[in-house]
Image (cartoon, rainbow, N blue to C red; front, side, top):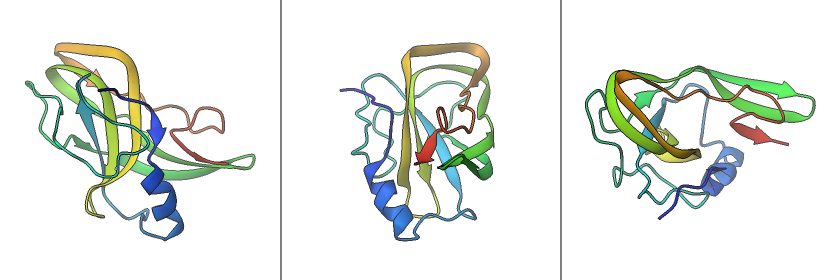
Length: 139
């Protein structure tokens, strides 16, 4: 299995269909290395999701939905990095998904290796909303 960072292909078509909206609720769930997440992921699944103290299945609600234009690139961002306080977990990647729209996948994050937290804050630092680094970009 593998986790490969990407904007979900299904999200790309659904955005053009007007399915995902700013008012929707988006979440981020954490996964272990055995997860199979990629551009082909279409929906949230609890399979190979992180289990441990301080983590609840389904992850956290993302805060601060924001859309920016950097030169000619549109960027979708959340202004607050998600934090699991006092967590004892190991995660290899994450899935951002839209709870309001039947848990449809938005994007997969690959941490590049296992990240471990032992009774401490586990923070996912979302990238800056720029044309070069933004999490979800439409150029």
